[in-house]
Picture 1 (tube, rainbow, N blue to C red):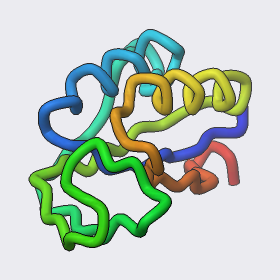
Picture 2: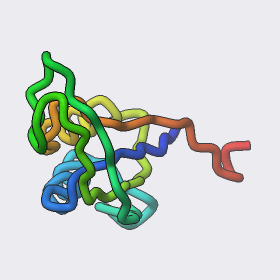
Picture 3: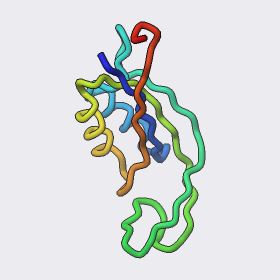
Picture 4: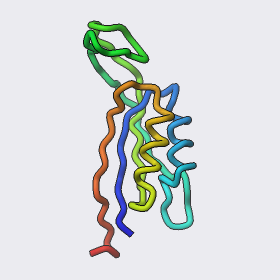
Length: 108
């Protein structure tokens, strides 16, 4: 099955909820394990413009937030459902995430 790695950032306060939503939707499944992910702490920075409705911070004020970068694998068969669950659980108006194809030795 075609697999992807999805990477996103989320405020630490919402990291557990996002991980749970992703796992419950089928993301983070690897062999006989579910809800698998890797996280690392970091700083997110953004400047909301006049049209933004920021969850954290204020319009026109540069913000710095303690965030987690979360990575997990996801099968092609559930990727749309997993991203929808991730976005629903995430508090930000604009979620920073990317999806990369994942190649494993057995796929080559």
